[in-house]
Image (cartoon, rainbow, N blue to C red; front, side, top):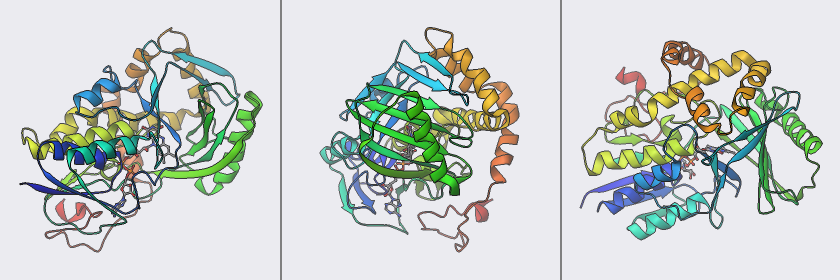
Length: 375
Ligand SMILES: Cc1cc2nc3c(=O)[nH]c(=O)nc-3n(C[C@H](O)[C@H](O)[C@H](O)COP(=O)(O)OP(=O)(O)OC[C@H]3O[C@@H](n4cnc5c(N)ncnc54)[C@H](O)[C@@H]3O)c2cc1C
């Protein structure tokens, strides 16, 4: 029987593992934490549904993943600009699906974990891995923080809803959100710069949302998380396939990485099981154009600032169904292809952690991708 090691039990690793096991492979997953999902805290996250025409639930079915986790469709969200003026976005198909993340009942991770167990995957918890031999899926998530999200989970009397503030003052180069479902809320400030002043931005976020919708935060628990934006040159190094955020596969504009994680996890597994398409080629086909467009979107957003956002959000407000326009404006375009080298150059100017102690020969390091030695 073919065997493979999966390092990291986030969405990308779990999607890989269960796909491989369903195809009859012997799969061992090593997770550094004591259970799945411990990187998160039971917070709400959005499985975005505007970047592709196909509904994300259909995409998951096409990828062979069941929706056996808690999920709630949202057809509406209110965006506030820097002056806290509201802009309503409505969609005919869901704009996004709310999911729960973490080691909690109904979470995305618990659902995928159950599917993996049923498929016969073996798990080793509390097992950080730094080196791996043989065929491996590296799904260790982000390795540095280009962006941080800090916030609170709390109980509330607010009605279900999704609210987002885009203001440099509240979340520099990022955004703040308040998500409520069934009396549970997640409030957060996602900052892409000025990270050391996160406390100030979090306070500004809470104050701004409270001025819009007065609410009490019952049983408030703080949480935080981080993500990275970078472009890995090699998705595959020797027998190692990098998936999800460990491969730099992430939406550079908003940080909606779940679609990238789940898709890349399955594609990496399929490149092993059916061998019909090389893994990098499948990423090129399914994700690359959108990821590159998202990087250009970030470049433009940072250049245009609050005024630019205010101008654009009004365009999305007008139609009854904002989803097609969101997909069109946010998606790939030849003009973005032209701007992409600039966006890439700008990204490369950011300070970056680099693993330098590897000589690249027969590398088995989990994180090192030996890019330097292979160029
Ligand atoms: C606060 C926050 C809010 C977010 N909101 C959204 C959202 O609304 N929508 C969206 O689409 N995305 C969102 N994201 C991004 C999304 O959560 C990530 O892109 C996604 O989880 C990436 O999945 P992954 O499997 O690649 O990595 P992860 O989910 O990070 O999983 C990696 C796993 O590997 C384990 N691991 C790491 N190193 C090792 C090692 N050496 N050995 C063994 N195990 C290891 C970790 O413990 C972890 O379990 C958010 C991120 C944060 C931080």
